[in-house]
Structure formats: structure tokens, C-alpha cells
Image (cartoon, rainbow, N blue to C red):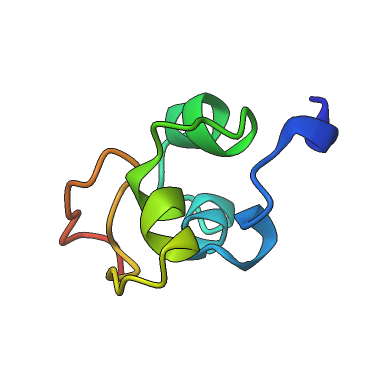
Length: 67
């Protein structure tokens, strides 16, 4: 994987932790985080200083199972 194209927020994003804990499917990380996907709602909210919960997925849905 070419981490040079990863989202700049990836190392501090809670989704990284959820993925490493086996709680989040790798497809989320591949599609959004490792590609710095401009459609990532989490990234857009972060860059605009807008609060979003840790368990919000990149498409904006909330996964109540992520804690």
C-alpha cells in the first residue's frame, strides 16, 4: 500500500484504531483512508472544524457497534 496517498488524518482517526482492533472492515480503510478519498464525510467535517462522533463511518452513517 502506498501510504503517501493516505488521508492526512489517518493516524489520529478513531477508524484506524477500530480497524486495528478488528472492529471495522478493511474495505472502509481501503476505500477512504488509504486513498485520501475526497468523498469522506469524516475528513470534510474534520477540516471544517465540525464535531462528528468517533463511530461515524466515512459515508456519514453512525455505527453503534463501534465503541
